Length: 253
Image 1 (cartoon, rainbow, N blue to C red):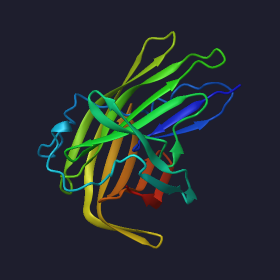
Image 2 (image 1 turned 60 degrees about the horizontal axis):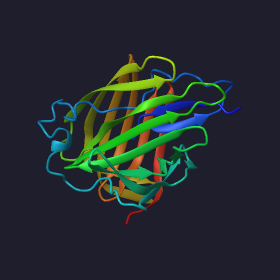
Image 3 (image 1 turned 180 degrees about the horizontal axis):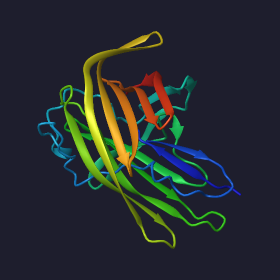
């Protein structure tokens, strides 16, 4: 009997989905959420404007999104499957890029479906996640609504921020929908930085802090975006767990 426990770690996404087997299907941990998007304005913060799709004047391409682009990460020193863009799809009239894996972790399994896509508009970069768990061995089906977060505004200066007030809706067959508020605060920590991973030094980096708060639980995420390459490092801190993913190789078309 195959049963599932899903953890959604804000990645990028930043949230990454991890799957394990247990005796029963366990409820989704309310402290670990699939992030969503608010009214499309991307929040205010002290970013001086440039909200949502309105964006600003982009300073470059910090996440190249083209089919067959791929990045290979080592998570805590262990190489993962390639994070590869495999197709595009239109969602609400916008072009989204679908991934075979995300940050080296597969989002597809025999017992559940996880869909992760990204897009960008006017210097604003978005991550969208959706989870569907079908009924297995008499257990109820579970759906986590498709929602979006902003992971980068490449036109902001150091210490400028953006905020989002989000709602995750979880539907379990036979029960009323569960609406959970989630708040996101993004901040630019560095611009034009450099980072050395192994023998490779990456330059023109924007380092981002993204803090998610859900029901009093804080999930901290850090991204290093290199111009014309994409994510070169990702760090997630949740409770006592500190996970680091570092770029090992990439193919940009």
